[in-house]
Length: 119
Image (cartoon, rainbow, N blue to C red; front, side, top):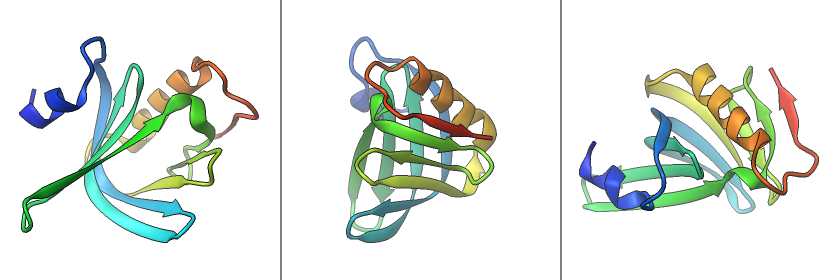
């Protein structure tokens, strides 16, 4: 496993699926596009973006219990705080399988309210 992945995981956390793509992240202040890796672990989602030209990286953590909607057809998932993430251009991985993995873990996450699935 690559060193950066190990540094993001807690001791009892394991990677279930991964996708490398361009992600459209819609938040309260607008839409941003990020190219990176999204890891679906047994505990959470991790979006890791590395900016090689400036030597920095960025990590965003998304918890399964915060997901309110997963739309496999449109390749997106939404959270109760208004954030949505859409998978746009996939370089590595299977979008449909990745979203099905998120669905599985979201269904079993504690505290989910008003969860909708679209397929």
